[in-house]
Image 1: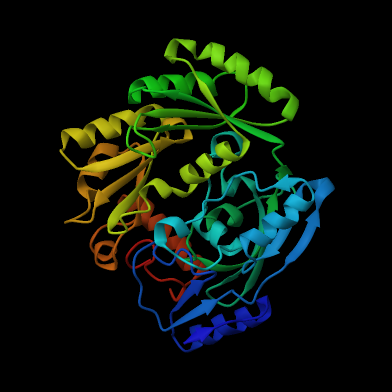
Image 2: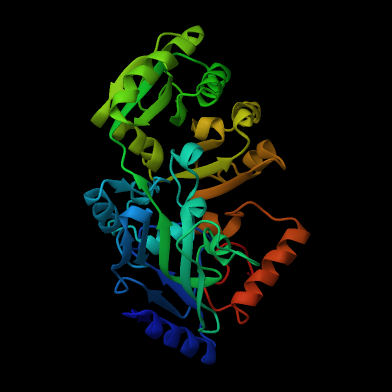
Length: 394
C-alpha cells in the first residue's frame, strides 16, 4: 500500500486512518536514502512526492520555506537565482546508494544531512528555523518560525531534524540561507601523515582566514599520495590575500598548491558525497563523529585491531568516513571499541541482513534509551511511524 497525499491535510487524514486501523507506515520522499537505517517491514508507505513547492522566499530576510517533497535541486535553483545558497551543504546520498531519485527537502531534514561547510556555517539543524509536521496521532503541528531565537520549551525543530521520520512526518521546512559563494579555492598540501594533517587543519581552522572546509585524504583515496585540503570561499577580492597568508602560515607543513573554482567545487563534492567509497557497492560505509583531535586515534586503534578498512577525514578531523568489507559485523565491534564513549559511529551503508544484525546507530545507555522511548511515545504513542528505523522497539 502506497499513499501519496497532495497536501498536509490529506497526509494527516492518512496517518489518522493508519492509526485507527493499527497499520504501520514508512515515509519516503525521493527514495534516495532508503538504505539508511534499520530495515523495516510496515503495512504501507506514505510518499511526499506530490507535496512539493516553495511556499516562501524572502531574499532580504535570508529565509526560504518549502514543502517536504520539493526536490533539493529546485530549492537550490531558486536560491541561486537570487545569489543565495543553503549554508550547510547537504550531502547527496545517491553516490553511495546508487539511487536514481531526487533528494528532497524532507529527506535532508529527516537525515540532518550536513556537508563539509558544517565546521564554519553550522549543521542542518542549526540552520533549520521551523517545521510543519504531522505526528502519530494525525495532528498538524507547527514549530519555530522565520528567525533564530523563537523557541521556548521543547525544541520540536531540533528534535525532528535527524529523527529519520520516527517522530513525525515533516511536511514543510524553513531554512536560514546565506549569500552564494563568489569564488572557491582549495589549498592542497601533499604527503602528510594523519597526525601532521591534523595539526595543519587545526592551525588553519584556528586562523583568521575563514576556512570553510578541512579534510585529509590518505594515499589511495582519490590520488596516489596523501592530500590535506583547506577550502577558502566567498568574497572574490579577499581570496588571494587569505590564500597567500594561509599558505605562509602552513609553510612548516609543506608547500601548498592551489585548486581553483570548478576543480575545487568538484573535489569538495566528492568529499561531501563520499564518492571515493561509492564502489565497490558491497563495502559497508561507516560515519564516525568524534572530537576533531581524536580522529587519528580512532584510525590507529582500528589498525591495531587489524581491521581492513579505507578512510578519510572531514570536518577538520571530527568526521571519519570508513569503508570495510561486509563480512561478519563489518567492523562494528572494533569501530565502536575504537570510538569508546567519546563519539558516535553510524552504519550508513550495509546490506539488509547486516543492518538487522548490528546496531546501525550508536547504542544508547539505558537512561538515554528511556528518554528516547518517552519522546517517541509523546509524538507517536502507537508507534506506527517508521517503527524501529533507528532502534528496535522505538
